[in-house]
Amino acid sequence: MVLRQLTQLAKRLWARLSSAAHQVLRHLTQPASANLVTGTLVDLPRRRSELLTENALLRQQLIVLHRQLKTPRLTWRDRLSLLFLARLVPNWKQVLQIVQPETLLRWHRAGFRLFWRLKSRSHKPAHRLDPDTIALIQRLARENRLWGAERIRGELLKLGFRVAKRTIQKYMRVVRSQSPTGQTWSTFLQTHGQDIWVCDFLPVVTLFFQTLYAFVIVRVGSRRVVHVNATAHPTDAWVAQQLREATPFGETAKHLICDNDTKFGPVFEAAAKTCGLEVIHTPYEAPRANAICERFVGSVRRECLDHLLVLGNRQLVRALVKYAEYFNPSRPHQGVAQQTPDSAQSVQATGATGRSSACPTSPTAPGQLSSRKLMAVPVLNGLHHSYAWVT
Image (cartoon, rainbow, N blue to C red; front, side):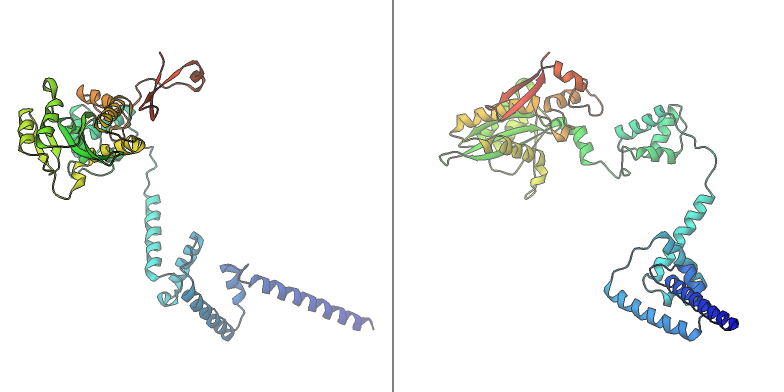
């Protein structure tokens, strides 16, 4: 009797243990919780026919997913696992489903480069240049856009600094993102902008549907407005007279860019030659050749004329003069590093290198704003304002 009870108890205990082991086995082999190591250990005692059938079922599911889904994102652990298993499988190129064989080879090459980069890394502390030497390298690269690293290295040797070419290239990238293949447009403007004027006409329709033509001359280097005027009947002689009025007391440039309008005729070119200007006509159907003047014309429209009802020629001239008097000393311009045209012209006239800040005064601390008074001068009846601190 006791032996029978012990036998039944042993059977029930064995059944519970086998059921628990089966549940644990099922939990370990579930796709959500199983990993590569546990899945491989669980597959060791299974029959070969069962493994082949399961592989066929998994392969069919991969084929369906590959038709419908994009390439999944793999973590670095997934990539290492694929690299390790592909090394053990002879036909790994045919087995891959979610990545291309070229992708796996690229991962292997990247890992190979990373391994040797870490192994060949020097353990000596890096020799850092003096901040003054770095500033000198960047200054030479900024002031001489046509110089390469080897040219700057030679100039540094003249000054008593011995710096490697790679080091110079490293610090040159801060001020020059690419190697100089030629003179850029910005470099050309910085060098010759003070000697170039541009001019163009701006048609304006009045309140009574009369068309007036505003004539403007702008200096390229500083974006300063040299002359403005308007008329209802622009002719070659009228434009020539405007050019004479724009060059009083010998104030002139070397070149004048204009389009191929018939108003810039022989009388205009004769007056320009008398004033010491060489007229350069833009190519046909090339508005960007006179882009700086077109930019100013757009600013006049957006910031002045679009907000006025023009009644006649005298009012238009008065508005243009007022806008020019505000534009030159008070309006910052993106083309000259947010300086005003007058300040940019003074910097270029004195031969200063680089571009200074648009505000020459020292910064004001937040606590000092309440103790200073800001003056606002209205321009064009309050359409714009010019701000300055009251001294």
